[in-house]
Image 1 (cartoon, helix red, strand yellow):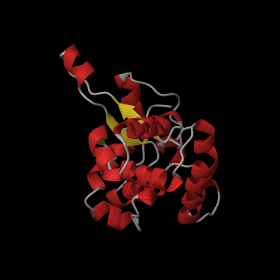
Image 2 (spheres, rainbow, N blue to C red):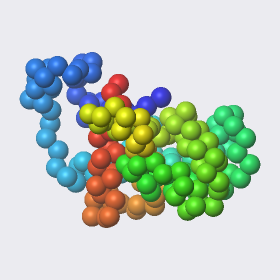
Image 3 (cartoon, rainbow, N blue to C red):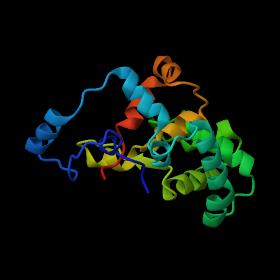
Length: 189
């Protein structure tokens, strides 16, 4: 299940997803403007519903979320023998959000084999942690050959795994661009 959409977080009734230009313009007229601090505050917090329903510590929530995911869900999906190495792999993928998938670099940088990197990224995709977006080119052969980009579906968990301590440090940091791009790449709901 995906996290909350920006409209849900902002408590705006925007109706169903649409691509019609007139409907998009109508939604833009009713949208509340946000400054950069507010945008990065939402990016840092993420879109998990539990973080918006109760007064809960973001760090405690994501710590529990990662532990539960590793200890229960991953074991149900596949046989990951080294949970600590898998956690490092997840953190590596989080640090590479909005980048082109390169299995050779993933394997080399995390100390695993290339087939293991493919399998583990596939686990992250099938469990709804990461999405892969294929590139678009006019040349259909390039579309087949070129590698997709990977994006974390929840920017809050991505910020937690990459150890950003505040929305301000994230906004001013080297990963502000990739996080901003990642926040804009959520699939429509």
